Image (cartoon, rainbow, N blue to C red; front, top):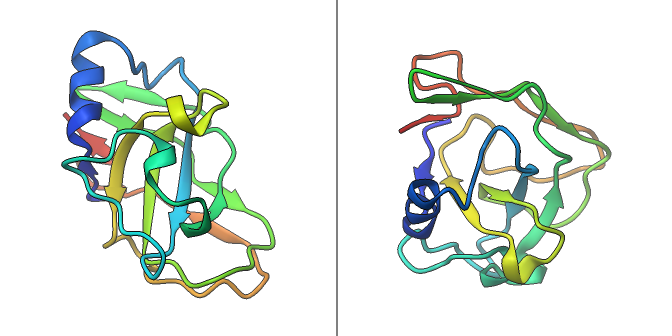
Length: 135
């Protein structure tokens, strides 16, 4: 995943407001026909229109940070239906979209854009040097 970090996420990393290892980290699939995330100005999940959020993963598992590189196990969303989506967005889930900070945006991951057809969708992170992303 060649993810771009949201500007506000960078601030939250530096202040300790986001801890990738201990926080609940999820991914949402986003339909750009409804809303396109803005890495410069969007801060919370609520900044992405609810109708643009097609599917959401469970929490990332087996997260690790080594040498400034973030990684986790692949994650599967079961029986995904809905509108086509063009990007995935990683966020910290607080239980409230208005306080769930956006972390990273990717519209170039393998399989994007995607048209859900009721089958499972698996997000497999890169095996390259930067894995999910590097700081």
